[in-house]
Length: 96
Image 1 (cartoon, rainbow, N blue to C red):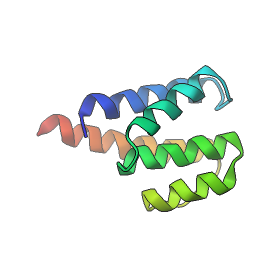
Image 2 (tube, rainbow, N blue to C red):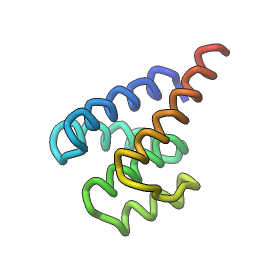
Image 3 (cartoon, one colour):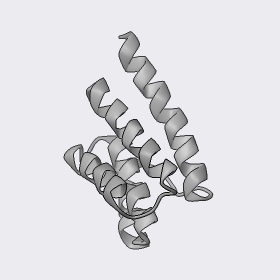
Image 4 (cartoon, one colour):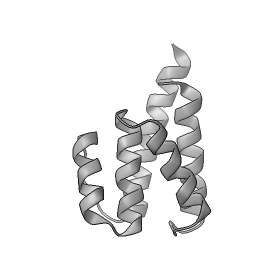
C-alpha cells in the first residue's frame, strides 16, 4: 500500500467528516478511493463506513467482515477511531 494512497483516504474522509458525513461528491470520492484498493484492509474498512453512511447496512456488514472490523458507536466516533489507526499506519509507512 502506498503512503500517498493512505494519505489520500484520510484527506478524503476528513472532507466527508467536515461535510457532516452526508451523501454527495465527498462521499463519492471516498467510495472511489476504497473501490480502487479493494482487498486492502484499511480501504475495506473505509468502504464499510461509506456504506454505513449510505444506510446500506447489509453492504456495510460485508465490508466490515472483509476488513476484520465491527461497527462501533456513531459514524463520527468510528471515523475518529479509524483516523487514529490509519494515521499510525501512515506514520509507520513514512518512517520505513
